[in-house]
Length: 266
Image (cartoon, rainbow, N blue to C red; front, side, top):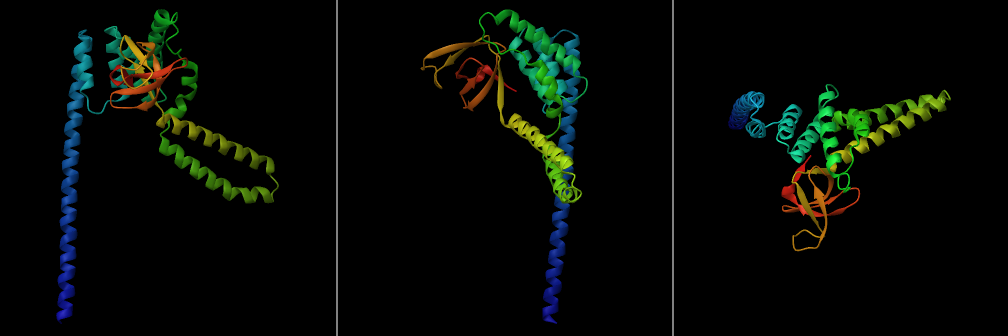
């Protein structure tokens, strides 16, 4: 009887512990959900007030309100870029619009593209003679927009599923002597793999926009190093090394170190 009683008490303890953890888990979910709802409500209120400030031509106030939004959407980045454009802050405008572009979906792209074209035209007019600004690659961006719109996880799952199906079908196609179709399928898989690799590189590669009017390019990560060039506002760069105070950047014609505060990361 004593052993049965011990087993019974152990079962009671297990059940009681399970119920306690379940209650705590549900309470945690409720608290998290309540917190998310509160943050979403605050973001919605800031978005409405920022839009109103923009309509009243208070572009600086609107920009600050958009900045306070905790979870900015592509539309928020676009509106921030529009505010910066109205304030004649070309670097800030391009930075925010490029952030919007990287997160934009497949549809309603014309308005964003028009704003980007406007900024690129302004940059080219003012700085092409010095050759310090990367030229816009709108055609390639439009062609690759579909790839960027697909989440990386979805592409990885599709790639894995496609290869699994291909290996299942390969034996049947060989038996039926459908080698041409098999070669086409393998080629399609390699193409999908190339797209996946590109998407992975896009995720890993860090890009930025120069948001200050004139940024000195140094040979090393300090102002004590030799000055090797100058980057102007709106210049798009690739960030090779990222430090708390300095970043090593590269353009089509220059490379060196710049102060981190002068960059807006896309």
